[in-house]
Amino acid sequence: EDQVTQSPEALRLQEGESSSLNCSYTVSGLRGLFWYRQDPGKGPEFLFTLYSAGEEKEKERLKATLTKKESFLHITAPKPEDSATYLCAVQVLGYQKVTFGTGTKLQVIP
Amino acid sequence: EAGVAQSPRYKIIEKRQSVAFWCNPISGHATLYWYQQILGQGPKLLIQFQNNGVVDDSQLPKDRFSAERLKGVDSTLKIQPAKLEDSAVYLCASSLDRGKDHTNEKLFFGSGTQLSVL
Image (cartoon, rainbow over all chains, first blue to last red; front, side):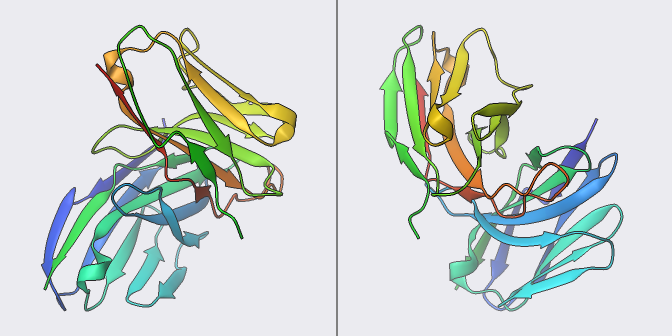
């Protein structure tokens, strides 16, 4: 069975303290891995899509990387406005279904 | 560009009552999704439409949940009768359809309907 596991469940950082969120996946074949950001009371907002091992994508203070078993979302010098829940999702080859992990709740303290 | 519209924003019902949610996707998006998000969990796919047809409804509790997509545009999700465990946020999302052999890439989500079953 395809599985997506995110860690840690929650992370508290001081402003400027860099860290990484982890998304490990077990799928029969990966078509794409996605990162979304979700603010309280809102739907998830798309950040990145990664397709193959070794691929990296960046947006402002965020950088996503992908290996054959996991993805990392690196946050460099975070600011309080980066506080949100970050969701990882995968799409499996041969299927259109997108399966989400449980998310990492990030809190950045000024 | 207008986003995904959902209504109502909040709904409180008693168990065994029925409830319906409405979604209007982004214009031109052929694929529409309904997700259930229980507090503290990630979104769980209930049903996925491509135009009028159902692509995946394997996790839809069909004895109480039903969904339809009218003319390949708007969609409604219904629960009848509701149970306490149905308390959750119901998210609608849409994406451009590039066929089953392509990555769906961006899903655009609405703000969701928060359902409380008492």
